[in-house]
Image 1 (spheres, rainbow, N blue to C red):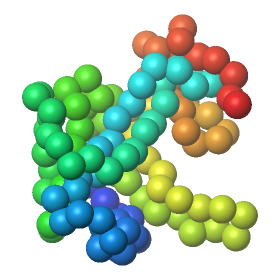
Image 2: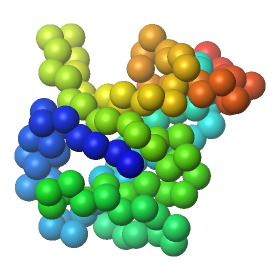
Image 3: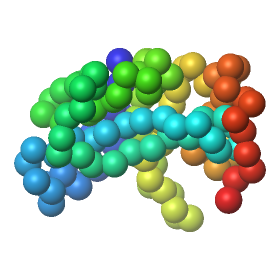
Length: 117
């Protein structure tokens, strides 16, 4: 379903070490953004009904049922750049992405697009 690059795994392990041991990375999409759908990530201690749980060598990733349709086959990476870095998602279902990298379009969701802020 969702995989992690070595760099993303390393950074998540560093961050999770400071969190509650029961925390999972919740990855989700929501309508909006300049391309139609926006990515989101947050730490979550509770599993929701319908969540898919992915265990990546001890790092738990939660994806809700609706988001899993858009994120299946995606890879989470961590990019460290001089002018800012962070986690990014490489999504094979995205037919186009915003220049900011926070939103994408699968071809069916462009009607919900709005300008970046």
